Structure formats: C-alpha cells, structure tokens
Amino acid sequence: MIIAVDGPAASGKGTIAKALAAHFGLPHMDTGMLYRAVALNLWRWGGDPGNEFEALRACDMLNIDPDDEELRSEPVSRIASSISAYPSVRTALRERQQEFAGQPGGAVLDGRDIGTVIAPKADVKLFVTASPEVRAERRSKELTARGMPAHFDEVLADIRARDERDSTRDTAPLRQADDALLIDTTDQDVPAACADAIRRVEELMASR
Ligand code: CDP
Image (cartoon, rainbow, N blue to C red; front, side, top):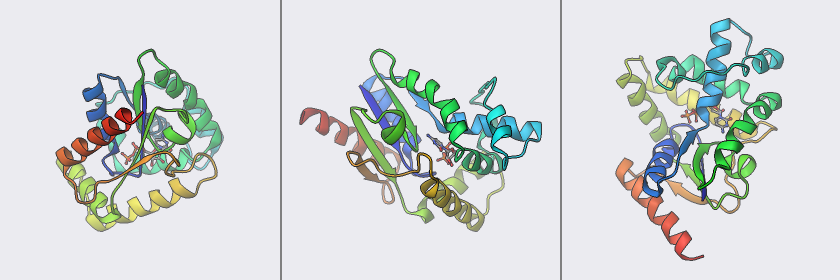
C-alpha cells in the first residue's frame, strides 16, 4: 500500500505521515529532507541557489543526517524552496523517492508532489492543509523550541512566499490531486489530526 501525503509548509503533513506509517506498519520518507539536504550542501559550499547547474551539482553525494539541526534552519528552508523549482534537481531526486515508494509492502511518503508526480497511482492520497497564520504559529514554536530565534511576522511572510513559489512553479507545483482526501488541520491539535487521518484512510480502504 502506497500512501501519499502532500501539503504546504507546517500543515502537519509530516506528523500525519509518521502516524499513518506507525499505524499501518509501513516505512516513511520525508521527501522534503532530500531538498533540504541539497540546499544544505549548496549552502556549505557557498554555491549559488540562483544557478540551476550549481544546485544540480549539490545533488551529488547526498549524505543526509536527519539530526543535523541546520537542515531545518530558515536559510536552508528558503534555499530548499528555491532549488526545488529546478526540473533537473527534481529529476535527480525522483528515482530515490520512487524506489522507496515501490518497495515490497508499500510505504508512506510526504512532500509536495507525491500524489501528483512521484506516485500518481498511490492507493491513498491525502492533502493536508491549514491556514497560513496557524502554520506560522506552529513553525515559530517549533523553531523557538529548537533554540532558533523566530519572529511570527517574518515566519508568516516566509510561509506565504514559499506557498506562492511552491504552487506557481512550472515543474511539479504543489496542488491537491483530484483523488486526494482533504485534511484541514487549522482547528485540530496533533492527536486529533492524526486520528482523523487514520479514520479517513481506514474508511476509504473499507469502502473498496
Ligand atoms: O516542513 P516544510 O513543509 O516546511 O518543508 P519540507 O517539506 O521539508 O520541504 C522543504 C522545501 O522543499 C519546500 O518548501 C518545497 O519547496 C520543497 N519540496 C518539494 O518541492 N517537493 C517535495 N516533495 C518536498 C519538498
């Protein structure tokens, strides 16, 4: 069973994807980490995010340490959002994601284009969203908890800018797949959002 979870920044898609993976006993991939790892590589080399060729070079030898705090820093988030618009970067990262999705038994992947491009035939697709203000509040708390200074207004502006860039790019823009279930977590805390997602997926599977 392949479960595709897409949605904008800080919508709760990662948390929901992890909960679904644990519930159904499936492996999980946070595909945003791949783009962040490329961004971090580029940043450390001092490469130019405005140059597609340099961004593509940063896809080579991608070592990902999920515990590296810098992966979630604001400069890296911003670079990830800009280099993810390059078609060559997306192609370079596609195979890794499709191999993960195609493993025997299935997988849960979360990102922006899982249900539309990476796994368009996924058995279950969720599109997780929430208002920009609520998402900015969550991201500010998350950053503060990690000891990174965060100002709500700046985080909100950044989230809006990333939404705009991710949704309007030509290659694999962020959009809800026609057959995706919509989960709006604006008024849901983490346990409620995860329980709702699990219930909706189980209902969908029972109806087939
Ligand atoms: O956690 P958050 O939603 O803030 O970000 P993320 O999921 O880690 O993704 C970081 C950036 O990578 C996003 O702003 C997207 O531009 C890009 N991304 C993408 O283009 N396609 C994906 N499948 C995953 C992330």
